[in-house]
Length: 567
Image (cartoon, rainbow, N blue to C red):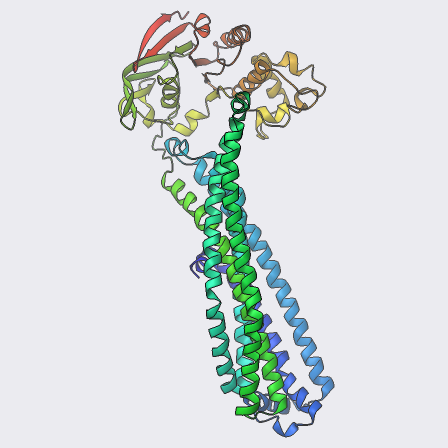
């Protein structure tokens, strides 16, 4: 119930329209069903009993007020028209629900993306990639399905209520007695829903764990295969997959057990209802037939409502899991308090910087200057804090002590969004999408023209080989004619960083995986760009020092100037 109420609050107008259509559909069908009583009275010749129930009297008064004489043809016409109206309303309601299911999945996915992308860097780096992927794909889909099942359950309950009202008007005592018996049967079967809910929670937990682990394994499969240790990862994935299978089996069993147990208990329900109506209450046959028909509709609606509710509770755990991720990410939203426009007219200066991750102090009293128009290199062993310095310059992290200054203005006072738009960033991992070179450079930004892409490729020293490909910039990376070397891939990622004409280009171990000759070529290419560009390159290799005109070494949390030559 909490799940459905949550969605009704999130989508009040759309849900109200949907539920209203469902209710009107039930009323239309109930009105048509009410015509069965006089119809059966005429058919069985028991017209003397047609006023023996509240419903019979109401129908007689209705026809009398309209100066109509009930006939089999008229009653059948009303019955058919009511069912047609009901079908149309149900179709409209189901259409609305179908659209809502798509809207729910889309809204949840967009909210997740927005929350994650707006979260602080410190929060983001601790999130397993597979967990976010699972939430975006699997949990959003299951959440929408849970909404669909919940709305169907509500529709069945509304229908059952309309049928109950009609049955009460026929024989209220027998109806109340029968409904009590039916409610008891549904309560007895409730434990199947509880078991299904537990299986659904296990499924959500196991899928989250399995897909997170699988993503991490796939990203590091090459070294595992190279060492012939992929079997260890396979065993772990196999164990988690088998646990997921057990949860799915429990889920399937609870659903089928509910369906199987409903039939014999329904038979008992009808037997009791018939006995009470015929033997104890001595109702006329026409009333009994209408009441039994309505009770059958009531029970069928309630049974389906129970099955839909069971399906809902199986999937709703995915919704709560996804909602938890969204809320956590929102609480960790990155805040931007600076308003000043970034300039970078002279330099970026790191002044008395102290930075730590928890209790581990990484940088201590660090001082470093990145001059405008310089090719500044920062070398040091892995884990010494080089990437952390980059994160401080980009404003992804702020130091516990000291400050980062841009032309003597603290970075906290600068509009970080505008500052980051002036940065080109090239990581060590040459991530290229399985798409055209053009798309890999523009990333779908429609404001970037073909000529700008070509200019960026020329600046990165990539135009020579790209222009020789069968489709040029529209060659698909990885496909026939689009196979490129590691150095060529890196040049394309550099072109991606240059296409927006940044003021600062950051190379984060960008050449570390290349052979010395290729690294030298790329450094030569970049060195020629310092007339209009400031470059900060970090590496654990010494090769880059040859091309840099300013070089620092980072050790033990501090930097030492190795050379400085700026013309």
